[in-house]
Length: 282
Image (cartoon, rainbow, N blue to C red):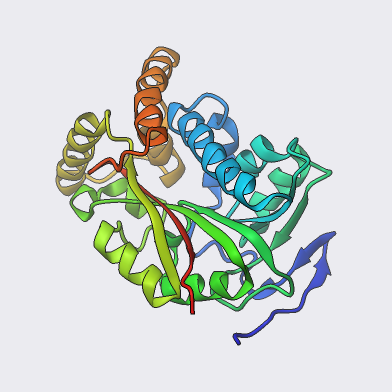
């Protein structure tokens, strides 16, 4: 059995990992401002929320009434898509207080807690744990996965996503403090080391992948020649913000990715890797 954490209240927030709540070592604090601004219009966020909500509801249908923990909930955008589901008891966790402040303001009736998944397991269990674009920020990712395993019910499920393909590494990964982009092989191996059996593995951002790859490679070449002008938050905004027309078009295209995944296909490549895993049977 791993370490079970205890909590204390800090400024009205239940904190399990208070020592790191304000250091922003693994994600820039200005990123929360930007995420809160573009969450409703970003084609990527909209597609991600549709797909991941569908994956969560498939597991909920299997489990019935379920307790869900969203690890690294950020500003609570994804949790908001699930909050009206009466069959889910939802907790959103985020390591940094700034994200929690946005989340609590947006959804005052949802439980949000401060928590670093590498420091131990929470003092309660869950049936579904989600972690969307979280583990690439964590140096000790296997430790975090093992802690998730510790607090997951025996028939529960972990649903996660991570950025994929190291050859896509660019200035954007550096700005948002990524430690790595995963290969499918690496993530599957780390899940197995942590006691999980992957039951569904697919890429996402498949149909737009050629454009994404060209954009990232050009950005990497440009960054190698010239430094960004301005602050990191300006550089981040330039790389993730699109016009209304482009967002509309890309959002429509992403429905194809979602349809293929819903049909049960495992898309072979894409900017994001998505995995559903359950505890390995003894």
